[in-house]
Length: 357
Image (cartoon, rainbow, N blue to C red; front, side, top):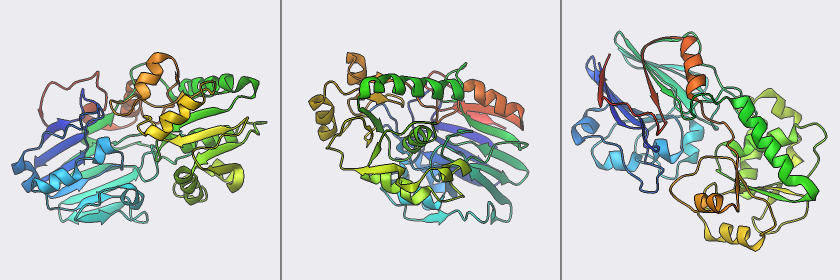
């Protein structure tokens, strides 16, 4: 079989892979770039016409943003995803197959079987183990073990001929020290009773950081969430399938719904605009020059978060909801993989466009 890397290796997002052989062909994710240019994957029309399945790991646009494009270019097969991922997508595929949480193993064709599990990156994000004839392919998607909020079904004791593994964070970085840095920075910014603003994405680290605060002994300051994030909290917080058991110790009313405009003293505010792409949110920052702002995710090419950080107006400490290269190497040692392709790290290009396995 062969792997064609259509994006995602040494790239800013644009995660997309084409695999063919043993009489079958399929796609793993189809994202656009996060450098502000919305570059599309390097699929050919012939590949898209031959592909029988598109396996979607989750809804973030660097994994899903090119679905409409690949359909326009000739892909007609089903797009497989979790129900949560489907709910989160702004563009709904023409042909969707929803994964059933009660059936984590599935026969798609007599010689094509899949197994899947939760990755801990966001609600509904999944990894895939795909068997085609005698060959097995593993795809991690965006993966985070040990998150405060999201459940993960760990990658252990899996055998595959090819493993495409996330290594978003650089070598030497580990989750626990990174979380501690975010919390220490946040508590430092709160000194003197100051309110703090945290721009976050709607689906991802926001609920993890809010939960970490709520679970901190003695921390009783009010925590506010933009309405859409607050709705996510109410929807997920009592779902055993999606969240860790300790989340059930947080009262449902611990977080307050926020209108995105009104600021009270002593509050922690979660704003669902991780790159400050909306003018009204930048105006909120500018109107409150003494209010600390903390970004906890990577800086992308869209929005104006990067400019604020470079000017010194906004602080940056990254919360780990991805896997680092060092952590990925540890996970690989817990499994039996043939070839391993690290992806999702712009500093790690893969110099072969096609990989045989």
